[in-house]
Image (cartoon, rainbow, N blue to C red; front, side, top):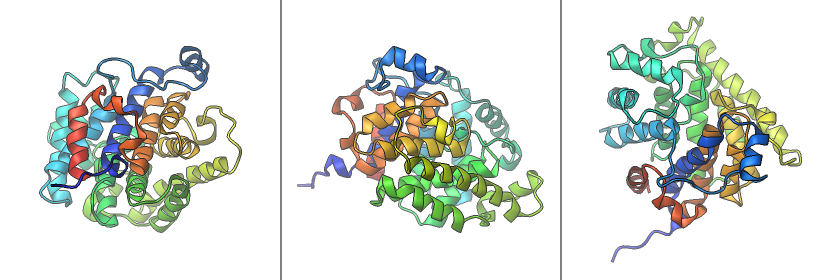
Length: 336
């Protein structure tokens, strides 16, 4: 008789479902002020799924696109993964389900990918929007070395968001999920991510990125990528400062940014996750009760808390009510 894996150990499933739960809670609050959110849901923000199923946004849809590309890959090399990511992204762009206010950068780049352009030419080089890392969670769930994790995270970001900060923030987001799944605590993450960012500051992964740095007009590959790591280090410094002060219960965006750009989405989601490490639903609600990109912040907070705690983090009835539950369960089971 096969051993039964406890829910607390199902960290891949916990992370994927957590991302979708946060996305669903933040979907109706994304363009509201904090005062409007609290007026509608109370001071704790939204803490219950609504709808049957509870609908998600393009954040979860694109995370699933990345997940299935990785699931189907014969190897985790750029030449094997890039065509699968391209195919999934292009299919998402024209899907009738792509009706959740998707980001313009993703739509523009995916249209160019669908036309067959090299991805370095299809990408929006100047964009570091959070679309780069809202979807990267599946990379952090793989059993790979850190160099491969970094390459995969940056590649999936680069197909649409060619800015170096989008690349660096995506690597850090995937690394955070990876570290949590390996047993790091949420409280340890800011220091771990800061150390990682410093160590990678001038590492340009040419085998994954090709000539992207030239498209951006940088003098050297190192100059190009260092900009991204420096911007991530700056917001991680703000995160560390915020966590060293008492929680005033207010909008976390005031400390680490509104999350429309990749490095701020990472930092603000981490702020929510660390503040509410012992109450995963509160972490989602805190992310959804923001003046910024609430669905992306809450989605990443859910991915982090779920990677730390597994499926036991979440109310048991939620897994039956979230949109795309079958796909989330299949991918989660594959990586658990």
